Amino acid sequence: MSININDVEHVAKLARLDLSEQEKEMFTAQLSAILKYAEKLKELDTEEVEPTTHVLHLSNVMREDEVHESLPIEKVLRNAPDDEDGQFKVPAVLE
Amino acid sequence: MTLFDLSLNEIHNRLHAKDLAVTDLVAQAFKTICEQDDKIQAYLTLNEEGATESAKALDEKLVSGEARGLLFGLPVGVKDNIVTEGLRTTCGSQFLKNYDPIYNATVADKLRQADAVTIGKLNMDEFAMGGSNENSSFAPVRNPWNLDYVPGGSSGGSAAAVAAGEAYFTLGSDTGGSIRQPASYCGVVGLKPTYGLVSRFGLVAFASSLDQIGPLTKNVEDSAYVLQAIAGYDAKDSTSAKVDIPDYVSALSGEIKGLKIAVPSEYIGEGVDAEVKQSIMDALAVLEGLGAEWEEVSLPHTEYAVATYYLLASSEASSNLARFDGVRYGVRAENPGNLLELYHQSRSEGFGDEVKRRIMLGTYALSSGYYDAYYLKAQKVRTLIKRDFDNVFEKYDVIIGPTAPTTAFKLGSQLDDPLTMYLNDILTIPVSLAGVPAISVPCGFASGLPVGMQIIGKAFDEQTVLRVAHAFEQNTNHQQRPQL
Image: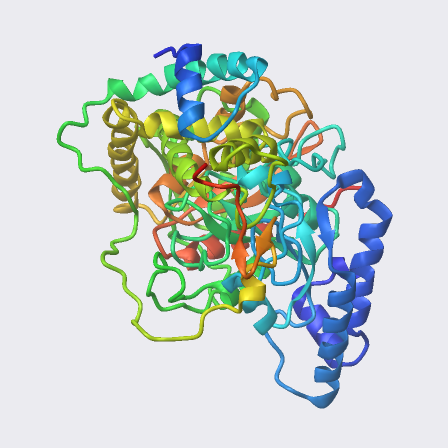
């Protein structure tokens, strides 16, 4: 299946990416080629096949619900690009 | 002869006899790196001060007669997507160029408990996405056998460092072949353990149902030692397997008489370089001479593996990489107008082309209207691929074929054609989708570049995989080192 530049713009928006005009053209061509290649999966009849989401037979993995100390705030904020009063600082969400 | 030419046992004997100190080992590692890494560019971050401190502490331990860990004193390089407390971890990405982890990955703790010395962090394709290491946003790694060629990806730094003697051993991560393919291209041993055998806690996630940490070493015996040190259940990783860990080192008996080997026709057919195929046929003759039997079989869904993998891995990547938003760590765009602009601009500035391409492919495959056609379809084909392996393993002990269809390719030769680049992993990807273990061992040379043989085993049967690889290695002479 080939995709067009509008599809790429839409997907980039969903993925929270801004693309230049040059990137849009490049990704349109490359993603079209990859998706066209992926079409070969349609050759297989998988109607009765269960999907494999995971190779190990694991389900409902839980840890003990134990109270323990949280990370120190200075460690949590050590890599933050911007912080204030022990919190991550971001631009205003509401105008 | 350098210390890197000595076996692990020889090093430990010399340490015990006080002929050698851990500080000597570590100093020699940094001397080698200093002399030649500007050509190879395997390292992104060096830990000279921390490693020297650790080496001194281990030397004191030696004097005091305290118990020594399995990897005592050995200088190790760690792929830069494995977090190391206080040691910069970039994932090969500008997004994390200044990231200073606040905790250790479980494997990093296990290396420390085994008394290995972490000397630095190794270059890689950005967020482990790539098959050539040209997607590192810092510098491409170069193949020590020929500096005009790629080392393979995404653990190219990990493979090149071992080949060039810049670490005694290294850790890499393998999602679709990222340990085995660079091991093949660089002429070293690379082991992808069974999914779930080694904890992924602290491995920056790319495709969570496929990622697995494993060792790159000079030889098979070292691989067994490192696996022994890093394998085991970890409550911090919800996908960790609760299985008994056997003695991998004692499995190296050299005995393979009566072993049943399957050779998939798809792995030695069209698209596989003639010289690579010949190396594999020669290797099979060696194994036959040791009493093994081999037969050609079919893994009929092999041709669908690459498409399946790129849909699934990209879908998981699009989800995993959503956490990179410029708020808590990593790159943040300057002067965004609002929070949404902060996300968009930070991600657009921080990620390279390959990462953006895979995020978009995954987002597309998971989006409304396409989920069934792409993602769910790929999950079903994954079942068929896994069944192929299950069927063959009902009758055979191991599966053998080339690790990659060709030897390393020239830097830049496939950069503009991602689909061709993806097809380099056609022989490693099916193994990853099935979650079974596989090792790549050097088995010859083609046009002056190393060829790797892939030995694939049943789930959690690393012992057999290592035993076969060791028997082959002991009866051949492909363990060579490049002249730099």
